Length: 220
Image 1 (cartoon, one colour):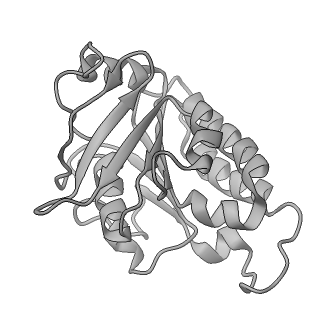
Image 2: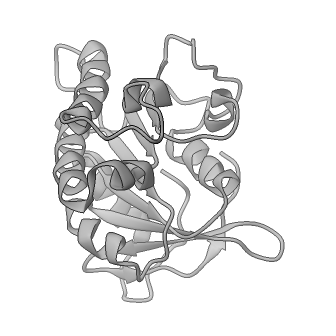
């Protein structure tokens, strides 16, 4: 997970809280009406430093650049330590004007869960070795509606949490939007992004601990 500031405005240590979440499998809703480039940087950080031993599962429902731009360091989609699920897989190769067919949301869960199970070790996995990401829930909301996406994200977060993984799920909308409020209860924490004069910034919203100050969103 990205490097946080030391304390919350509401009190308590951010690092200690995030370590507690990581031990049981932290599931993070990434919010903020920001350009895709900012979301890509956040994903590169949340997928783990390139020098760390991680297995990365990334689902892209909507991306305007080469898939490798979402991955940290020199990692590429074809690497053994990476499972990339692209837009055609998640959207079933449907054209934009076609009606959404039943079961597509379930198919999204099945594809991601299958990649997790393929990696899953026989014993109890170490915390935070699995890193999963979805960009973005916006596309799924447009296709399926908020009730279906709430069910989908509950199943996705459960699959990632089962192996003590860190999952992050982008919803590039304002923090006070209805969609954020509707989905917030599924997640352990929110990471809010914003653009700034010099560099993108981030802050954490941690239930029971408050909100951090804004800090720069650096590269991993």
